Image (cartoon, rainbow, N blue to C red; front, side, top):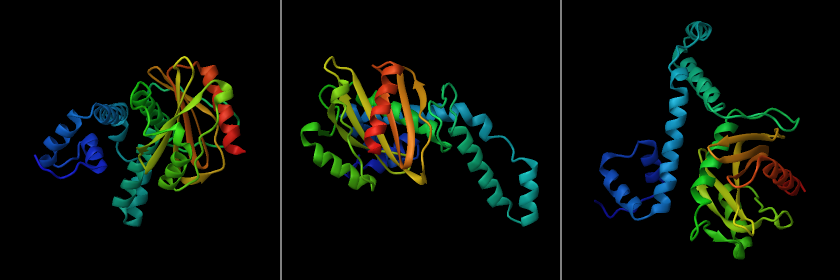
Length: 257
């Protein structure tokens, strides 16, 4: 074992199965003493495994003849094959098996990876919402610091919507790793202990707006949407679809104002 500190990069490489062999024991020992982190990384590994299982057949399909012909004609077969592979991967990830997704509002076109975005929000909710002692990194009593910190890390101004009138009070929030950079998570709770999380990430390209979409991962329901450079996903295992939609509309209106 080494005394070298365990970094987030080590944890993500471990989750992806890409950690150098010499670091495995150190990371596993570190996780063994930190149940919360161990469950978070386990959730990421389950997510990656599910996506691979769902789409390994599609990703192994040969490049379509028309793309092969175009690549040969331009003497860029390697580049074309890579592009085709990324297109296939984007199509696969954009529609994971077992998800029930349909538009709830008539807005503009969704970006290809929104379904994976929703799944990550569901995994994050399932990982942290059961926590009693450490559900958040920064509590609601230091809300301004929380918002400023997350805004700085994401590179965009983020806000914690006020949901008290709907019976949900802010517990606090935390910073999470995302597929393209840092992600923010705000957690809310009702008086009887039901929890709700708002998952916020920045987008690679600006989108004017997308439809509200609904997905369900095991017992976690998620309403999600993209607004310009920011994506939002509202998740709960305790609320009905109707309750979640009502809160999603409330969050949307506040963030637009």
